[in-house]
Amino acid sequence: MNAMIKFIKQTAIEVGHTYGKRRMQVALNSQGYNMGVWSFLV
Image 1 (cartoon, rainbow, N blue to C red):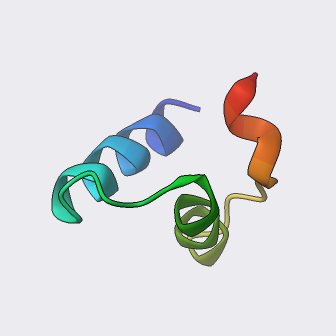
Image 2 (tube, one colour; image 1 turned 90 degrees about the horizontal axis):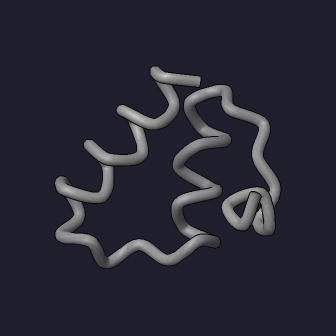
Image 3 (cartoon, rainbow, N blue to C red; image 1 turned 90 degrees about the vertical axis):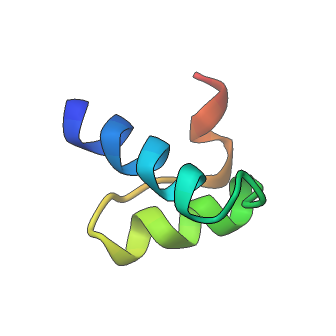
């Protein structure tokens, strides 16, 4: 879980905080994290 949070934070910084939840989901899925669009609300 810690690695995923670090990946999310690093990705957000790299893209200038312009990714919404759908693009972030694609980025997470491409790295092997099986996330749904609404998983960010939990």
